[in-house]
Every structure is written in structure tokens, then in C-alpha cells.
Image: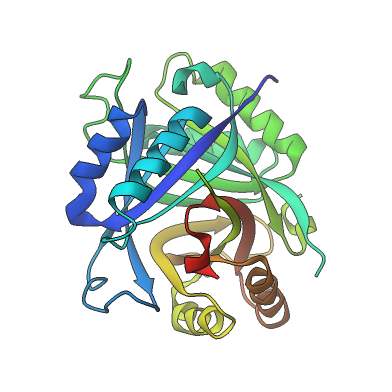
Length: 100
Length: 100
Length: 100
């Protein structure tokens, strides 16, 4: 079967950032996203009070070019001042054009 | 340490499809699966009402051959008529024979 | 943009093991982790009663060396007697030094 390799971006952030982050990824070309609730814990440089509650996990399947734009934006706007974690990985999908 | 590379398949679908999808992956050779609740949002070609509720995320670790069968089945039976998202990725496990 | 490839380790286990597992990954060098609730189902060699409840998913971003130590520990201490599932995958991050 024909599969296409695209990027899965996962962002974990304080719930209060949810709407801003969703807006940011859609503006950079994401066609959809998945939300779930997680509890994040950082043991270094993150105050305990920050993590004292639920975080949101946002996942989106995008082209490599869109992935680059999203990571660049997060790096420019969030990584310095917010406890936002983000990572990209390669995944295989059928009908990859749906996500591009 | 010896690790084996196998496939992690992730399926995100409307909750009502859960039992059918679980049945489908077990029939094609999956030995187990993990369920969690997510909220999916598609910005193109998916009606808002569809996503107005919880979706299920089904994850399963399988051999490449079983992964191929599962993706083929989803492609044949679901991708045209349902808002099912599925992707495969390579992961490393210890005692890979457990999943084969 | 400069990204670094690091390891994402995912562990799925009975909730009662949560604190021991978190302690184990932090002791081996993980700098943080994310928790979420899942429902696991194994179709072979796992009693139905075991899975009759919620499991915890623990995720952590670590260096390849720390990933190796964590998988080795899980293999030595858990895989024989507990229904613990664990896998590692490569992910790209910005500012990889944060996780090392």
C-alpha cells in the first residue's frame, strides 16, 4: 500500500495557552488537530506551582514545511517564557494529501 | 540492549466506531491495544457537528505485516466515508516477539 | 531551524506502579515526564482482571543513553512479572539540551 511520510507535531502546554496555540498552528497550515489532557511534570527549572494542574496536548499531522514553521514559531514565541514542550516525528499515512 | 523495531499504529475515530475498529485490528493480528479519549478537530471537509464530542484514540504495537493489513483495511473501509485518522510509526521495543 | 534528535520513551502500566516508575525514570536521568490515563487491553497472556481499570501512560524525552538505561531497568525489573509496555522512538526537538 502507498503511504506518505509526514510530520506529527506534539505540543504540551499549560491549558491557558490552548486557544493561542491552536490558532498559531492553523495559521501556519495545519488542517486539523487532536486535543487531550495530560499532566506534565518538569524536574528542572520549572516551578512546581506551574505544573500544579492539567496541561493540554495538541497533536497535528502536517507537511515537513508546515512542521518547520510551527516549530520555528514555538521557538520564537514560547520556549523562552513558557513551559511548552514540542517535538516532531515522522509518521506514515495513507492519503497523505489530506494533511498537506 | 537488544531492541526490535516494530510498528505503532494510532487510529483516531468517532467513539461509535470503537468496537468495530478494535475487532478489525484484533482480527488482523494485533495482540493488544490501548484506548484513550481525545478531542479531534478537522478544519477541512469535516462538519463541525461530527467533531462535537469525544473521539477515541486506539493504539496498537504490531509487526510491519500486521500494520500493513490494518492500514489497508482502514483505507478500504473507512477513509472514504468516515473521519478516521490513522498513522504508523517505527518504535523500538524490548522483547519484540510479544507483539508479533 | 536547528533540531536535535532525542528519544521519546512511552511506558504503559497499571496505575499502582506509577510512583515507582516515575522514581525509576528520574533516577536514570529523565528531566521531566508527562502522565495521562489510558485503558490497556492485552489479548494474550494478560488476565482480564488485570486490565479491568485504568492504566497510566508515562512519557519522557531523554537522551539515547538515558533511554537505554530506562529500557534496561524496565526489562530487568518489570517485563517478566508485570504487564508493562514500553517503547522508544526518535523525535526532533528544538533546544535539545533541555532534555539531556
